[in-house]
Length: 411
Ligand SMILES: [Fe+2]
Image (cartoon, rainbow, N blue to C red; front, side, top):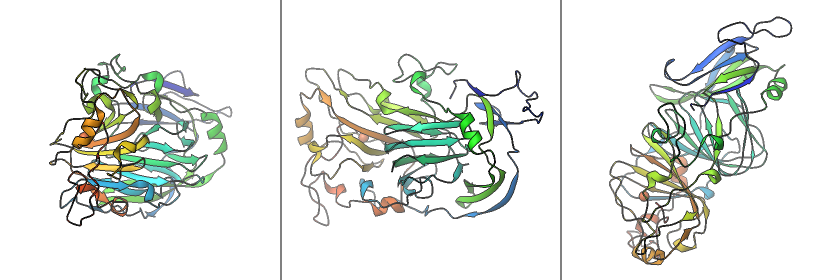
């Protein structure tokens, strides 16, 4: 985030003294990206951010991955997946590669432990539910349709107000608006489908700090990497990490809701990049939302067949009317994985049916990766094995679909 914010108590100049009413110095911490060469924030703490009293192993949920081999498109029915209820520890890995992992959890209403992802930024899409995420920067409220962007190594905990379906996109890098949306100084440009006014940062710092003030020996779950892969460590901090009385800078968590995205439409079918919302290293996030469609008199509103030779495409269907796709099994809560090296698109019947359409009432969140995705254990558990054969209407196990339209109108 290139947008400066200042919250709470700060000294007039950076790297100078800030004291409480009793004269005690606050501890200044710089949290910055890319080795002092990118966005950062300065935090002023009551405690010492490096003061730990213990460090033990945190056993992560199963992070194993199975290659998509033999190659085929996949349909994963996330609403059939049973998960733990903790917003962090209950996540099940659905898909992943060495750049990004997608996990899914249906929470209860208990708060998660304090958690820090030391591998990369998280972009958690809220399929349903409300609550807050408490962080060292303050509290961000979340609701259905939000992307919750949490920068790498931000201590935070999820506090659902109601059971919430969370689709966690965990990067091995940073997640940010596409560079082409930004001015050379980082402002969102007029052609971007959203602007700074649509991004909501943390609030309520004072209340959060006060509520944690006397807590000591606080466990923080840290997800990090070793040469052997992704692991977890349970670190115990002498004082609560939510002890920041003020901060300023351009690095902080925020939310963006898909309702505030202004879809870009065209005279003929527009390619997925016009629907992009974020990007990370070797992947992009797009959202396909209700909108007017193509207005050329001979337009074909559904996409042409396309072979994204450099990408695996993951669509998560989050809302809309899916009657038109009976037969493919795709519905709200579904994921389709259309791998690179294999063309996909609608069936001829879907093309014909789309002619003359003026509006699509469908919502989906898409992740395109530039390296092949593998199936997590949750993905394997939620798979509809008949999906790959729905274009042909028959397959090796004779359990193919009925030949109905097999893909989302926009994918
Ligand atoms: Fe596609």
